[in-house]
Length: 159
Image 1 (tube, rainbow, N blue to C red):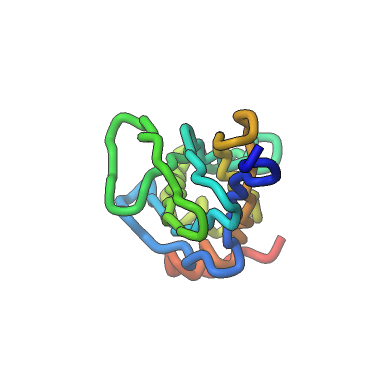
Image 2 (image 1 turned 45 degrees about the horizontal axis):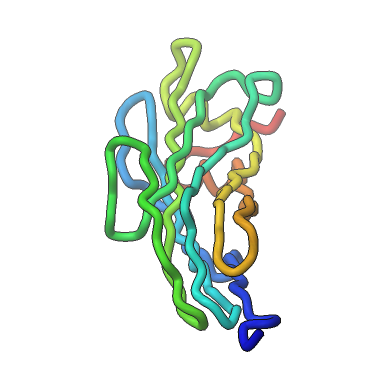
């Protein structure tokens, strides 16, 4: 009875996320990352048991790039796409990293593919649990064509 009304409340702080930056790059692809603070504004501990970075760029929208995402804990990179669960104590924060790899298609170079790029959303989907039932939530950021072109160092083609 003394826990009545006490629960976790995980809030992604999208307004203070880091700008996308280059993690790696070659002739055909670039991997970008942005770091997002997740704060538990509740009164009980919370656990993020899974996280997925899901870029939404179907070939119907732009078929010059293949886009994939990965979610990681800051400072704990993994090569196997596995997200290791973590606890966020009440009134504490953790930083999670959304990584997006863009690979040029159709015999285009990375620069050629980026010149014709479009804006697209990147969803950071996470499953949390605490005193409330386990549930999925989504934090969404937009990677604009302009931001990507600036990072890669090319000018967008006006179409």
